[in-house]
Image 1 (cartoon, one colour):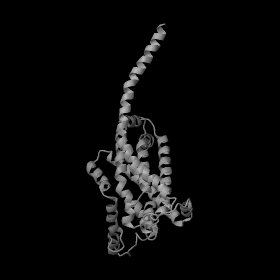
Image 2 (image 1 turned 90 degrees about the vertical axis):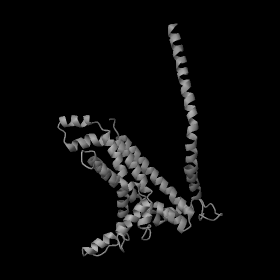
Image 3 (image 1 turned 135 degrees about the vertical axis):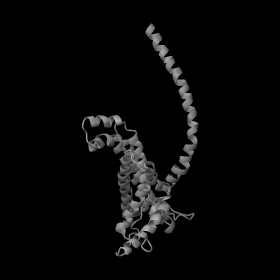
Image 4 (image 1 turned 30 degrees about the vertical axis):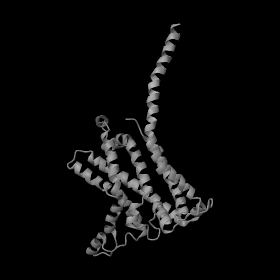
Length: 309
């Protein structure tokens, strides 16, 4: 008899304790409504509308257009420019990610030490982040420009011939990667620095007692415990690099020809210069698929590498 009473009391207690929680959570749903409407109106609707436009021959301005099925997708798969801009986009995304993370981690390791002018160095490295990417591109344009560029002025002063760095397809892609890395390496540095400062000194003291070298401490302590920071940086850098636009416009304009076009600038050119909105939307769908696959793959892979501190 007593067991039944105890069981009944627990059930009543459970129901009473859950009631305020349900009322509290239900009231919070109204707080989500503005954010939900914002996302639905500015992200979900344009995305779905873009997919719809990709099945049309719309020129971007006319009120009349026809649905042509998968013709734009067939055209995209047979267009050599598609694979050129996809290759460039992957170079921008993967290249910028590798360099930003490598340099950001080196800066963070340096600034995590007891050195002079640490705050000044951190500020200088992070400062380019607050500058508009378009302005940053123009700043570096006047450094690499063929006529009147600072680089060629120095080369001529040293007795060398001028080089057309921005007009060389073998060079301009890596210049764009360099400029993008230079501007946003500060974000990676700050994230890594926050991760390093959250690692307890007890791990390193125990490793020093066991006779572990600095490299062994970095490999077996720092890197595993930095995996959450690495995950964040990798995903952010991949997404940012794959949708690169402003720097390309200001440095090369996508030229010469389409040699430095990314998928973002190629879509811009298709829509506004060629008035081919349907095909631009098709390229946008392909870009979305590439970003989704690479960012989710990086997220899953590095999440599996994370360990508990």
